[in-house]
Length: 442
Image 1 (cartoon, rainbow, N blue to C red):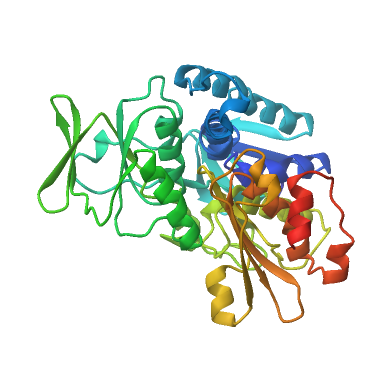
Image 2 (cartoon, rainbow, N blue to C red; image 1 turned 60 degrees about the vertical axis):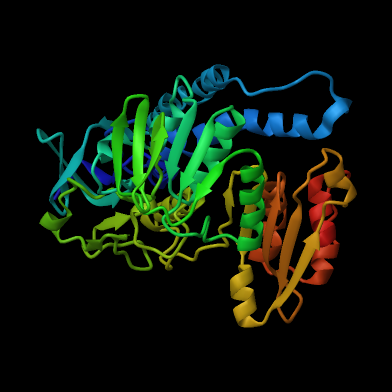
């Protein structure tokens, strides 16, 4: 049979476009179907937008620390920060479309639903066929199933707020909750965080997490553990949250940050027999679903890999290699780091502290507040934990500091490629920089 395309991607995020562009450039007939903005959540109303808004937070934090070496106050201007974010982010979807089309790919705007294993229907009116189909639809915000759930907002709404409410209530304890609380607090809003349990950022080293939580509390953020949120309501002055044992909280804006779930609705997976559950789509070690010509990549997969942009990009590029015959091997994941963009940041890569304790590996804790480089901008919270195996290889790093992401990026090659002590000693970074300091400690 002759198909319209060799490969068709459903979804336009990193799990699709990072691999679709080079695949089209190789000569294959490629199409990308996207119902919303090209680039998906990360580009438009996730990572990129968040870190652009966070720039003002970073500047105000540093200005407050350095004190009298800089004259004049510095405060975050929400309206101007939003204008800056839109100037940075708004052009990106078209830039990605231009990249795809310049490489020879076709961009189709609309919603795709499977008709059979090789056919999808666009917006219910037009059939498109492909030899291979890649599902790359990502995640969507989870919604609490409680009365008044329609009164709450999601992360996309927060990142596009024209005016910051005086008081925000955030339900959740993960990345989105803590990062957005940091931004809103720095911009002058009162923030209350309602937790399902009593643990925040459970995938990160808890002693470091508690330092960040304590700092946010000192800045005025309120944390309510074991909140048991029961309903959202409208009040005369705004909104209300019923929680706990007949307790009520009045607020101006509610953010439901209780997680994200695989975007599988209306794809028609049952029609073609693609296996999935609430964790996502089942794939084998070649990212192949239970239907041989249908693959999946990115956050929509049921996987123990971190649901992060770098994971989606790596999977997308792997599929390009697979489809072009550059490899037939199973996907071999590298060390994928993770970071939460609070102030300070918490970043980690490789073996975690909890894993190291279970495996009996060497754990070194470093308090770095007095290390001269961190004293330049007077960072008050600077700690690092490094993990080595029995042969002395660096196998894991966790750090809490404003510069933690740069430290982890610097040390990542040593973890991925298992550098020994002699090899690490030959890595001489630029001086004076944080990269040099990171290698010096490794």
